Image (cartoon, rainbow, N blue to C red; front, side, top):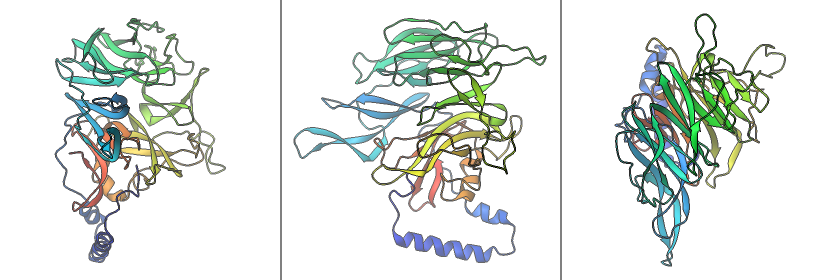
Length: 425
């Protein structure tokens, strides 16, 4: 996300400053709740409704002879895509992206998959995949970049609940419910090979993530302590990574430096995953940090994980503002307004900065107005988060899939309160 793109006119800032001063004077001696209420903005009607899927970027060949360019895809019943408009440069037929004009539904020559509603999406090197169905009798369909041949049904069918692909590889992985609360992982290679991943035990828990050659699952442990599988598995052998046994991992992500991070449900503990083990990550903040203090979200993690960078007009990254974003949920059993996400700082080279403390609501760097964050997306549990690459959108817009109220974005909305999280319309 660029905090500096498309600045509003100076007059707008002057008016906003005057209004803030008047409000501050009027609020002296009053309960701070009045100020919080004053920062609220009316919610918009979302273009992508309900509880959208995760967002994936897939290189799509543009109509005609255009080159393959990255496009952002998301689904909520139907398929939606976000891409720049292309234009003819100088009248010579050289098609080029204009990343200042990104919008939803631009004509890139992609069709929507047939059949029932879309439950999930994923991408590999050459195919975009959609999990379609009613929730039990589901089918995985795929389409090649450019749309040649349209959407084709694959050999993966059944009670598939989630799919994850290798963006730079050829395998798709599917989380399949096999009966009751039991799950297994199946795979499909682009060349057609498919089967069950030979994981340890009969129940892996639901497949919740894929990154760096590893797969995370929710797993479960019985009240008596019996390990019912789950944890993190090597994506090709199916063996379980030591140290991950019986853990409920909500998702995983690869940092810019290549480190793979997984997050647990309870407490949102961050684990570093390697070929040797999966281990909790300790804080290294000096004498003021307890030896037992760990890097964690502090509340239950929802599985929403994203990388966020502040960039300038040319797409250059500010090395002091690189973040790992983790979605949180204030309560599993009651309505709460403490949701949204927390931030973890990254170093200039994209590693997790364990010397810096977690940033919570009130101290977030991804927003301009923390009180407004609290009264908007800070109230909502999030399933997925994603920052659009600069090549697609010069504003590097930050998106969030909420659990029930559609796809949201963080934008400057002229005449509607300025910078804010609100439904993308």
